[in-house]
Amino acid sequence: MVKEIRLANFSDIPEIEKLLYQVQKVHSDKRPDIFIKGAKKYNPEQLKDVINNKLTPIYVAINEQNKLQGYAFCIIERKDCENLQKIKTLYIDDLCVDENARGQGVGTALYNHVLAVAKSEGCYNLTLNVWELNQAAYNFYKKMGLTTLKRGLETII
Image 1 (cartoon, helix red, strand yellow):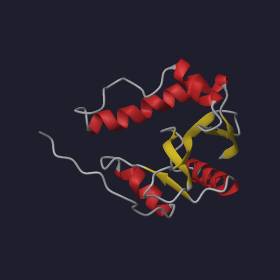
Image 2: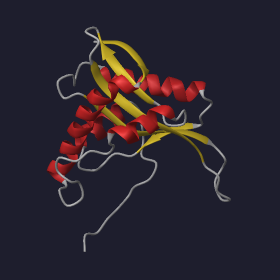
Image 3: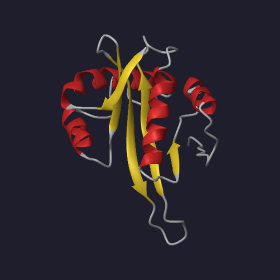
Image 4: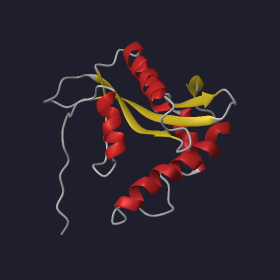
């Protein structure tokens, strides 16, 4: 059960790192040709920089025992291209729920919190990318009401 969702602080970094490893494992198990086994997306210094930047908020879900159960890395973006509308977007760069807390509403609470932030910030939309290999994440986002914006395709050569 989620007690609160708040902005991450430096003391959360060790728990965030554990979740970053969980995310990496999901991806490296299915696509070792792309993802390096045992690696993670950010080191502690990079996490401090992200936490300090108001345009890259990290929201963390805390349970009744004050344990971090999940996170949502976000980026507030403004598109500034000649051929696109000048809209403000909240992009979810990464959303993770601890493998021991899945199915308990943590992901839904995080997503709904981020959606509320996007609305309060005057964003036009909320976007994210999901890897084709991560069917569980895809199904979760569909359940949250997200629809396909664009598709990335590949051929391995």
